[in-house]
Length: 144
Image (cartoon, rainbow, N blue to C red; front, side, top):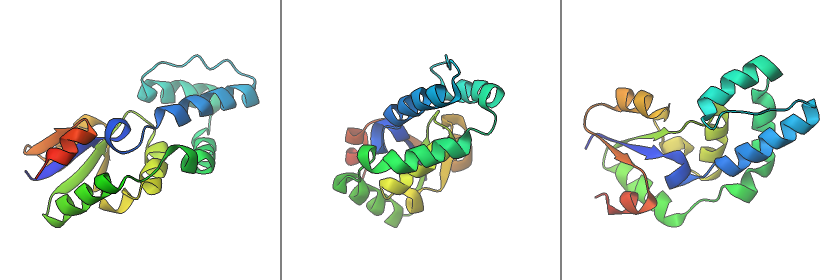
């Protein structure tokens, strides 16, 4: 195993509640109905069109609320340390905007251990063919 690709929302930090809260807040503040697609990559394109420079607003919102939503887990941190120490490259995949993913990773203490963040395809392309995809905390705990 050369690398692992972790599902951000299922393994490290669920960004969906912060995303939903931010969309609601942004819609209210901008007085715009933001009926967005479920896929956040597609939603980003709609936001680019309707709100313009929305990413800094998302970062500020996520940083303010991060401590309420994103908490480090000792067993997850230990697993990441062990894998990194064994020379395994760590990637994180998500459909969340990169800015939100970065805030979540920082709050759970994983940012410095992660080599690549992106979609699953991007992470697999970067980490290579022998990458193990991890979709649950239980799967992470089982890795040796």
